[in-house]
Picture (cartoon, rainbow, N blue to C red):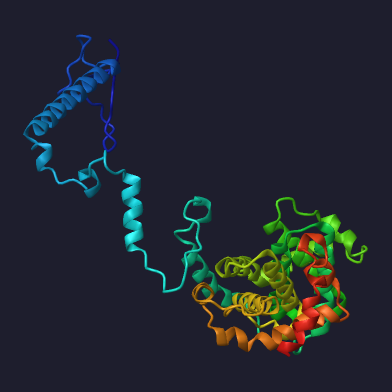
Length: 384
């Protein structure tokens, strides 16, 4: 057996001899017959036995508790569990309770939400549009926001008139056009002081590029927008302007669009396709008119629908602004009538003026050729 000699640090004198080898821990019994550490396999087996015995004790305790548990009659259960399933289902009971808790509609107002189609979110539709009306104030620009900038109201109308043609050429969704107009107005209201006139078209195509990425399934490519400007700007300039617009708007691009309000209001008014098409025509005329830029989207949609109903109303027809329209739009008759003259002037400018993109768009078959309806020229002066 080998030995080792240890010495003290202080005196350096040799200490007693100690046998070299593994030192057994106190209280641990060696399995090899000599002093040493117990094998790892033995420790694991002991731990497993302890765990199994603990689980067995817990199982026996849980079994005793179940035996002492009172019968099902003594357990307090949910109301739905007390129902006779043979008589009524859980789904029917939940629907009945929802209808009982929902606020009743005012007198003369009909329910326009399709509760059979879950994709229409009928349970939340009314609250969703109320929320959009609250949010649209954050996306509405002042009525004279171009004052002090290098851009005039007429230049804005020229730009938007051209963008209507671009939308038609690229076959973009109408939501893309409305979001484009909103992005342009909001950006110019924040950074219009630093935008020269030669860059106004660049702002327009960049805003449409951003809107296309949000609304379109297959958005046009960047080079397509460069081409539509006749290569007046490079792709790098469009990217740079895109970053500038997004930073100025702080990525707030979820604008409540006037077109979505109009669709809701047309459903509430139970209008036909011609009345809805004329309302869309009037609404786009409002979007291009700088004098109405401060009007909220919901009020513009309600005013457009009111004027369309008045222009196409038949003799002896009852009041066009029904209680259902008052309820779902949130605007009384005097509120929309107060905007009728200004909206009619905007319609007359686009219908009879030099800017013809909107008129040509709504003269197509896809828009029911509503802009060629002779009744517009016959009755438009009645509201001026």
